[in-house]
Length: 384
Image (tube, rainbow, N blue to C red):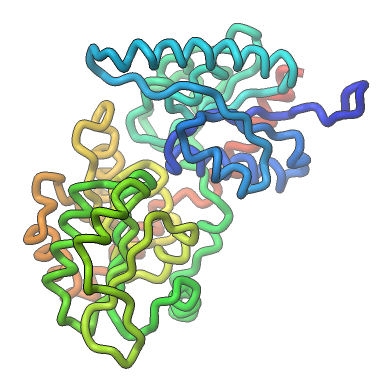
């Protein structure tokens, strides 16, 4: 649909962000809407200037508008005064965007970046769809959910109203990842790791996880002389320099070289290929990570972030652990010794790893993005 001036009217405004774990599910919904016939130009992403959406959304081919603001700390601090001021400015800018673009529906994936547009949609009576992919809904989603037309949830038993169980939306590249024997060989070639070694993937999230990184550095040092293993270490943007300094002397190996094959990157754009290629993954338990592990069928060690709001990472990890696809390692136990003992134990049981892979895959919701996109269209039609 085009306006009188000939511009394409916005069908859906996607909002939320901060971390890749927020942005990727929103992009998955956007891609699903495009696959269902909506022009890419009719989908607008509104996020935060401080988040990763400024880079990830344009790479995915969607228009993005970035608002000021940052998360509010859960204690009284001077920084919170600035955060509240930024949130107010973001809210006013969100109202202007909503009035100018007149989207038929607003879709929020939560986080502080999603609150201004979600509240603006409520005030301007634009239909709102809340997408909640954590086992425990985040604060932003809980605030606006009572006013939403529908809430798409990833887990049964969510406390949100008007809920529809969809699973967590996943990117097409995740759904295309292949853990069959030929698929894993292709995935290893994609990320540049030669065959023949046990491949451990470590990823603490797009921003990084200090405890996981420190334990992995210790593990890499203890494995320095081993030529049967490889570590692909995704540190997060803010931890790269520290980890690089601590792993001097370790590096990639070709198939003829002895010693540990150690790969170090800040952020992995080909994460689905890494999860398809590896024999075991060590990760934080963000909802997007857990959903990707399940969809691809990757056995994992999950280290929930302590102090996460409502302890949602522990709840996320428990879902995959109960299904048999993951083992939980508490943050306090995530030391070099604790990580090495658990990983080496799993390495010694290839049959258990195969069973974990099958269990993880059985727990996945591979059609979640399609279900959310269908829900978004239904809400837009109802409003029309």
